[in-house]
Length: 124
View 1: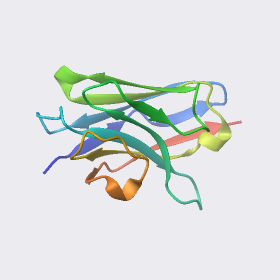
View 2: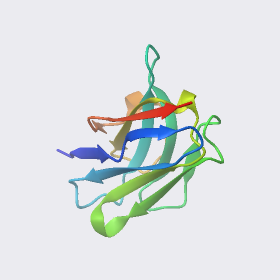
View 3: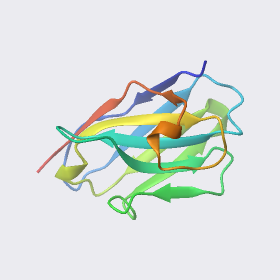
View 4: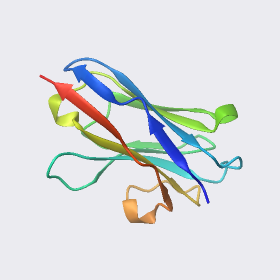
């Protein structure tokens, strides 16, 4: 059973930055895809970004493209979501998810493991 733990959320002013971390318990993550999703107040969960753990493939939602980036620290089994130029509409609980496949997907139901989420609040 893979466990995912997000951290790094918080309160930030519009235009600021945050870096979210997703630490995985699984030591053999090389064949997985990892995604980030978010759910704002009164909204459905939506796709934010995803990457192949081994690298080479990354996708972003149009709403965050050019502002968010993904990186990995393989030695620490951790994926990072760097969020820059934050807007009030980025306010949400952010979740990381892992999929037992290296194929990147935007569909949340195709992910097998989920973290508990971390709150990001952007004040205007």
